[in-house]
Length: 64
Image 1 (cartoon, one colour):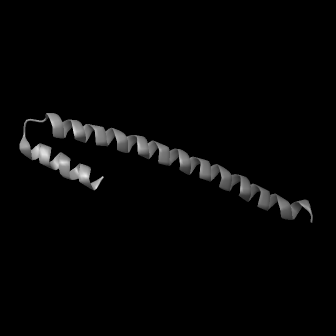
Image 2 (cartoon, rainbow, N blue to C red; image 1 turned 30 degrees about the vertical axis):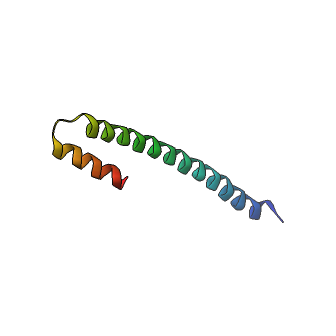
Image 3 (cartoon, helix red, strand yellow; image 1 turned 135 degrees about the vertical axis):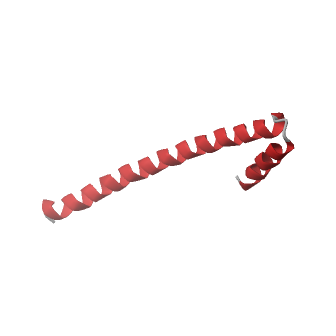
């Protein structure tokens, strides 16, 4: 085997590894945002004076 056949495979492997790391980080960020949204909706459901708003927050929480 020569270097010309190994180099593209090695480069592909490294780029794939980096891409997987970026995907993992994006998933962690989305989970954090989802948790913030969940807490906000729970607070709205618990503290809001309007029944309609409480009901909408509860429905949205069920969908999450």
